[in-house]
Length: 162
Image (tube, rainbow, N blue to C red; front, side, top):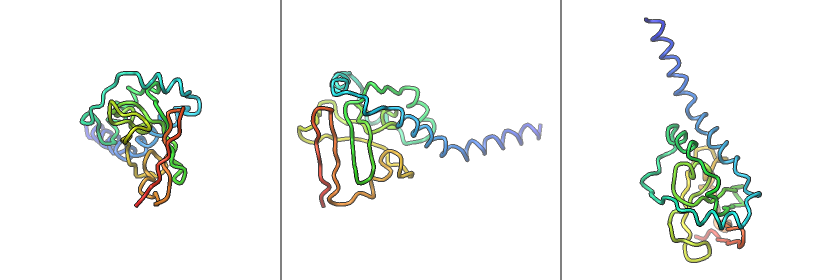
């Protein structure tokens, strides 16, 4: 009985130690699995017609359970644009709708009726400790840097101002 309990405790400890690494690896996998340069403007326009949820309360913090659930619901056909921040080497897809699946893979449009180029286009994203993942490097942005979004037809540039 003591042997079994010891093995269970060791395995539980290993899982706890590996959780941050596994979380990062899952996010890297889904973020890299979207061939942004292969998604056409027509695809993005068509994807934007898809009806999805915009329930911010359904989004969870980045933790292993939300990552696994998000990975199971991942849909790359919800990409409606691209977000670039050249100074930070950020290149992320913009997904329609708020969900764990969308947020582990890129940025998510926050409102149903928003349109790129018309008023504010609000996005949600996860800020990660690893600066190479998602919005992890966003705190390093400098005044004068440019944030670029595109729907495949038009490029919209936003300078970072004080």
